[in-house]
View 1 (tube, chains in turn cyan, yellow):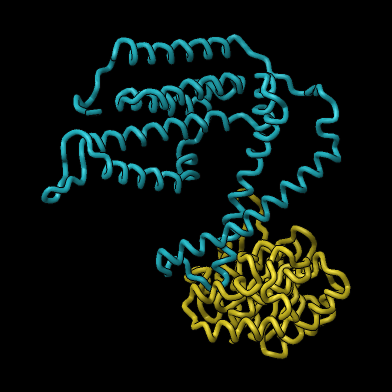
View 2 (cartoon, rainbow over the protein chains, first blue to last red):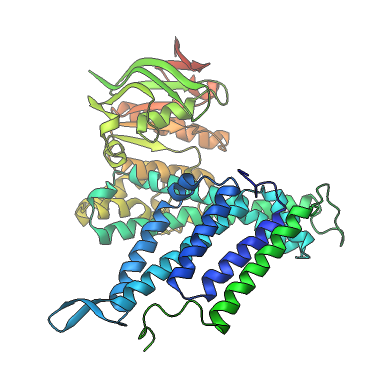
Length: 259
Length: 221
């Protein structure tokens, strides 16, 4: 049972991710989103994703999300006032609810994305090609997957190099710190452009797009398990949409939510 | 008193064999030290350990008497300048003038001092004519000298240069040798990480050879 989804076809994983993310984007209900997040985490664990490692590697993103939740909760004035100073309302029930929904939504999208990453990048590209996505676009996706960690390392190196100029980043005021961060983009951007130029030259010398049809050593094949998972995922997604939009189930959490 | 001190330092990357094994040596202020060894022997790793970019698994590294583990990168950077293998990773601004002055502006150094230091360093490295030039238009050799200039404006006591001859022609290499020798006469210590033994032999000082994670004091140049 453990790592049940790990060996499935990448297209199956893609279908599961589309279903989960689709529900997260189109359903605005905290209980539904909560349940979908639990299912997403379960799918991620069954795919062999290390949750702690994923959370650790996206730590900074989570800080940003929490900041957005706080700001959203403070600026959205819907529902009952929960915290107010004199006549000025700081927190409302609708604001908190929307903030929580946002947090659940991005958590679902992030955790579902980790399911895809359990396949190697060659399988992902082949999956996209077999889904009839043009090879050029699939190749661009593969380049992005390969170069994103390098970009991350370059940003880290640039930050190190700038601190070695004698700048104690934790001791300078916030405004100046922002200025320091703005300088980091120069070497990172020039490095990315340089890499793109080198890569394009290397591709041309290896006859990229020389022939209209490409063959591949790796060919993905669906198994019975893949078909079952895909069908169940789409049935589940359709059931959620129908119950929410047609039968209005479950009902609204706050009656005056959108008033 | 030694300026850089390695006291039984060991280091290994995650899940890998040790790169540095119980390294023990001292470098005095104003010394010239060359760190040589084959590719992948841990030369750059050792340089990064000195700068506090990497943290030692065991043992202690001291800079001017202070444990590197207790120092921020900024504090280390004030004492030791580090020239990366690729100078382009340490060029941040759009113009030469801004490149040399932005770090000092952030540190609230007065404008007069900034202008004075920038002028002196550019004259010293033969880049005065490029003061207002865009940094991306400079040649490789000029970018390297600009990166060195960026280090020098901080007035460090010691400079570590990682493979400084990579990509340099004979003329630029000779120019670099002249600059580095002038640092030594000014009392600025140097650690040159290189596998270019012909370049190293142009200097008088110590040669540390790193092989199989161990450091051997090879010969005096």
